[in-house]
Length: 394
Image (tube, rainbow, N blue to C red; front, side):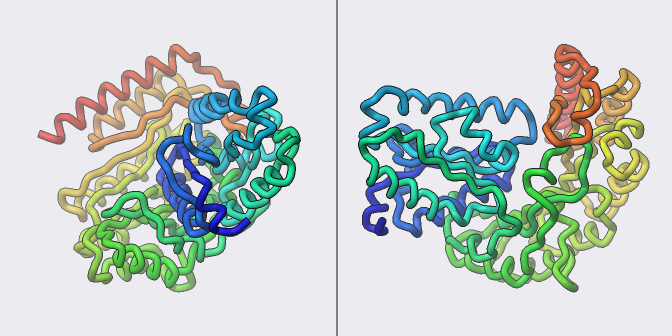
């Protein structure tokens, strides 16, 4: 299959989930574009449809299966299956790593399953599937499946494919994976252990992005402020990127409280290009629930961080993540969270209803909070936060 032939093939990528997935999709699109494929925005006109997925919550997984199901009818009936005109369907991202080859049992119209650490293999995999279809036009298309979920670390060069969907802003991945093992979180199981990119390679990517006219950069990692490459820690990395002249604004996402320090706050204050915003997930205002979540801090530790941040980073904004309905969360635990939100007055918050995730420690706990109670608690916190956000914007 030559690049000339690839140019006849159109690819669409549908992204679910976090900013990391957004960047992963850009990397995949860049790799495919460089291999000669045409990137389009309409899945109905695509020869290849890839779903880059999230498995952090059950609701996200349900949406993915539903959307993939809409393409199933294109592979039913003798004519489309045997002419090779039906799209190649791919499952990428965290759901691919979670389900592996069992995804083919769940949805027979999937052709490839590729985990987060294997995305550099996607062009070669698609090439194999296209070659198989070309050779076996009269045969059932369901018979050829490829999965890759065994990768340990991506090669840094894939981040230099040169594709960014936004012309002014770019996400730059500085680390992958997590070893915090919060009891509710599937990320360590589907993204693997922490792997930090070379700081020199990160700097090169930022410089390449600015040459394309990008002036705003957001650094990404599951635990971004735990970054370390030899003697370059996260604050030093911020300092070096801040010195890039063509860059106007630098932000980062997501921070874990246990790895957050006064040193970081001072850097946010002193580095003129660093956005004065901190996303600091609390998850719960109850010490009992925080311990069950394996968050490795208590409420007083978190409140002390917030106090130091606001004293050092004058005018800085603050956002958080909150989970309601965690197993055994009593009314008193929920009230602690509600009171925390009132006290801290976050500028914004992402509020989620707990759902058990495969592999996690919390999945072993009885999911004792009813759906109705989760909805009620979610609505109460959401309403409170909306009022606070509105108040702070005045």
